[in-house]
Each structure stands twice: as C-alpha cells, then as structure tokens.
Length: 233
Length: 233
DNA sequence: CTTTTCTATTAGACTAGTCTAAACCAGGTA
DNA sequence: TACCTGGTTTAGACTAGTCTAATAGAAAAG
Image (tube, rainbow over all chains, first blue to last red; front, top):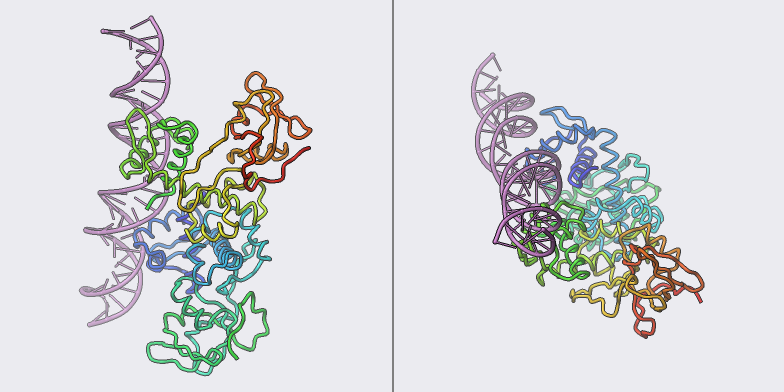
C-alpha cells in the first residue's frame, strides 16, 4: 500500500526529526534524500494527504503517529538486517548498511520475526543504534550526546556510530571506536577536529566524524547492549 | 541498470522458453506475468532494443545470451534464497517462494556469495530446481519428464516440483511428494487425474498438479541432490 | 517600512510501467 | 480467393516519481 519511496521519505523525516526536532524543512529532507526541493514538496503533499504527516506550508512537516510507526517499522527492519548480516553472514561492520537499505522494504513480517528470533531479539544493532521493538514504541536516545559537543578531559563510552559511510566505519573500526569503547577527549582543535584517547592510542577525528558518534557518561552501569569487546586499557 | 520489472519479464520468458521452447508469444508472457498483452508488447520492445531478446513481430521472442544470463542470475538468486530460508531460517517448503520473489532483485553479489557459501554451494533448491552456477551456465532439465505424461505402471523418482502455489506445496508435502520421493503411477483417470502410490499410500493428483511435477526414471543411480528423506517402504 | 535574499511552491515536462479501446496482421475456413 | 477469427500491435491516457525554470512567500537587512 505504501511504496518503497514513501517509506524512504518517512524514514528520512523520522531521523531528521529525532536529531533536530520538528518541524523538518523541505530542504533538509531534500538534502537527506538527495532529491531536489520541488520533488520533496510534491512528495510531502502526498504523505500529508495520506495522513503520515502534518504539514504547514512554508514551515515544514512533522510525522503523525501513523507516519512514525511506518518509519519505526522500516528502521526495525534495517537494524535487524544489519545485526543479522553481521552476526550470521560475517559481514563487516562497514558493509551492512547498503545491503540493509536494499532489503529493508522487501522483507515480510514473517522474515522479520524469524530474523529477530535467530538473533535472540536484540535491542541494538552493530552500530549501537537501538532497534525499535515489535510493537514500535518510539526509541529514545536517552542519556546520549554527540562526541562533537564534548570538551577536553571528558571521559565517555561510545553508544552508537552512524551507519551511513562505509569508509568512515572502516576507519572507526580500525581505530577501535565501536559501541562500548571508552574514550577520553584529549584535544579539540580549530575547525572541530577532536582527538581522543582510545586505550593507549590517540585518534584524531574530523568534526564530520565526531558529529556522528553518540556517547554516554562513562560512569553509567547501564547495559552496554550487544557492544563488541571494549578496546584498550 | 535493469529494473526489477525488466528482470521479472526476462525471468518469465526464460521459464516459458525452457518449458515450451522459443519463440515465446506475447500472450504467454502476459498470462505468466499477469499483465495485459499491450503492456507486454511495449516491454518486449524495450527489452529487444536493449539487446536482451530477439523479436519478430507477430511471432514472438527469444532470449539472447545476454537476456538468458540476466534470467539465470535472477533464478540463481531466487533459488539460493529459497534454499537459505528453508535451511537457515526454518521456513517451510511452501512459504519460501513469495519471500524469495520479493528479495531476489535486491540482494548484492556479496550477499549471493555469502549465502551460497553458508549453504555449501548447493546445486538444487528445496523444490528440486537446479540452481544456476555462479558463472550462469544454462541449466538443463536433462533426463526429466512431466509426471502428467506418464502411464500406469511407470515407476519414477520425483526430481522437482513447482514452487509457485503454496497450497499445492503444502498438499504435496503432506502427501510425501518431495524431490527424491519414489512413486508408481497406479491410475490415470479421465481429465488427467493421476493416482500414484507413495510408499504404502495412494494419492490422487489433479492434472494441474501432475503437470508441475518433473520426474526421472527410477533406476538412475544419479545424484539425488539435496533431496529430503525418501518416504515410504 | 521597504528591499533583498533565501527557501518553498507552482508549472510544466519527462520516463517507466500500466491500462483500455481500436486497428491490424496471419492463419484457417469457406 | 475471400472472409473471419484470434492473437498482436498501435494509440492514447493515467499514475508515480523525478527534474528544471519560474513564481511566491518569509525572514532578515537596511
């Protein structure tokens, strides 16, 4: 009933809304989706007509509960697939995103169920992103903050990394920066370059990378999820 | 470069060509694809322009080597997926077809490779259909014939069953008619109803079903593929 | 309060894939 | 040979999704 394309828009709007809050602008969606603004205007009109979002012209959009449910369903598919590909088919951390993007719209509820079961119903994917529950409760990012927003001396644990750019993921993987890794911010240079200590090594991360890493305070005793082994001392 | 839709047409044409030989008519494709004849005319025009088939107006089409390669690639995906879903995710024999149809166009070469490896590079799927090789050599149905074409007294081994109709598959599964099953034709009634003995049981199969089952002579010592256990005495 | 600038929307066109209705072969029948 | 019948193709329309170019609204600057 809902095309792949529409699902992609709802997913994009969901993540923009989660990051920067509603309303979400036409141009923000256009950038995220790599489409032109008129294309987005036309699509949000259709999505609003079908009740997936509220729209105020020239202002932006906000997902309705129904729109959010669709986005969460797609997100659940995406993250379950990432987890499955990593754990059962030996995909590397960096490879899974594109494959999951291609498959997320085409798996049945049955497939979703069986994959979740095979994984023991995990609640985070390999990047540290929370997997929406079967009943699609909104996921929250609770205690986390962006690494980019921290100051020298802060000691934090990596909660999640973006799953978008394979090259970046490979780089972080090599650097030992994965969900669960503990790090200390040792320098913040002009233009946002952030240097962190990971175990005994220091790693300098461009701002564009630091902005995609979410962290939580190091003290937390909370469940680190399915985090890989923690590096360093 | 090639849309899902085009891949589906090439797959359909491939299987029609394999069953009834070239040329394949517009109406046969239309029926298989559940599309109208004008739609098919328009699509085969595009496929011919792009070199995937030879077309003679008012006569029909025949796949080029390139078209056949595409069809075999899709078929390989389909059958690997069926095998994977059955073996690794506990799908029943009957459930896999639709899931594989949905996924076959969206898996990467990497996914194909990993799935094949996880299964030990099988050469038949759970229905008994041959899985095209990685290098896409044409598959042949060698020694097989349709159950429908046999006479009372013939003793044969099931080589493959159709993967199209889940209800039919469930029925055959219950009846113990799976690839590898040995059966004897005990009656052929008017209108094509075929009665076979499977072990100690007799099963009557409507012609529509008997026509989807391929069998080979019982004597053959050939490799029975990944056949399930053989039922009966 | 007016002007400039930036973003959003409208207008209109294009491709892919589909349909219905009408015209058109081609082969068999008279 | 002429006709009829049935499958095939053409004609034309429609939806989904996309674009570029032009217009319009909102917000910021003067």
